[in-house]
Length: 394
Image (cartoon, rainbow, N blue to C red; front, side, top):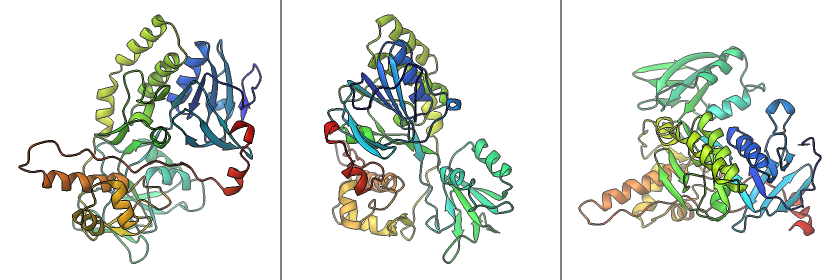
């Protein structure tokens, strides 16, 4: 946790803008809103240091809270968070959600076995003893461009990459944990398999607040306009949270939303719009969203947390389930620790395919598929932390 050089305001005070997320979009939004004269509360899930580029204040006032878990965002823009042993709420005039992205699923046979990791999980365990120097790792990819930063991290940790294979046709081997990868008629022994299915928007907080969501090329995304405004007044979503994008686009989207949320002059806003337009964010996102669809067999696990097979999901749909929420109620898929981040896109895909098949030869559009209902808490919170909520801030 830290404060800017002008001092620190109590979290219970009124703020013009709350920014959630410390990536390029969140930093850009905070700096721009402050320079436009707004008082800003900048919330980051990870602890922050000056080396992270924590923004100084402009003409406004920036209060920084690192190590803060934002677990609730409500339609009246009340933000609920926990950090430094305290639980509190704050209700600003505007909220900018810049919560980034998560890994997309890459559901090949055997992906549920212990020893499989997503790229983000890999980065997390490389700093522990879970992957030791000399470990043999296979990389399975459904994206056209390999993740160069992941390769560098593996080499730096002394990990040996024994195979790189495309997702289609690949299968993870092992009775109760990963022992090998099979692809193209060849089986290669390995200790871990990294499944790279690309990235997807992380926008649960915005959805919880009531913003509309649509299905995009890379999965579900919140409905936003060119300035990052959602369908909820005063709520903005920018950067990867609005659909995976480059760091340059994320930073510019954050800056634009920051000046709009702060009520900057028309000239300032027009300059930021023009700067973002030159980066062509639509094309940027379309290129990043490109992945190879991985077909799911009935015997392949779809929900890893609950161990639900694809066949069970298809059976629920044949039995009348017409939404992700309905499939969840009938099968328990989406009720596990990942809160549906990996299985909801797959359930939506099965529902969409079934709807398209049922609608063949029938006039009218196939009903749109929506993600699972978002409810608080968006992140794990203990009962003690909820009980610690300051009633004066509730």
